[in-house]
Image (cartoon, rainbow, N blue to C red; front, side, top):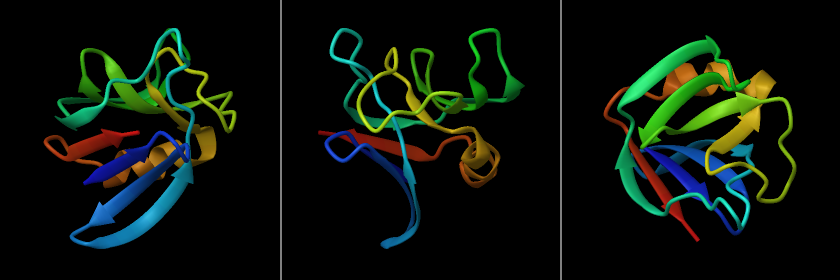
Length: 105
């Protein structure tokens, strides 16, 4: 599963009880906060889309874990979980349709 820790602005890939990888991320800014809760990845889109999202893993209502050109160490997105472009493909390959995404404060 995937864990998004909003207070630390990190994304963790977890296999069983073992954290496999941790990435810096940027979640939703106060005016467009990231939804919190437990979700499942329902769609994946490789490459870039028209909004500059790179290798997207959608988990609820169009929100995704995706690569992006700007990933500050604070909440700055429109609600998605941004990760650095160089990390996007490996994260995309690791995440499968149906995987759980836990987003917590």
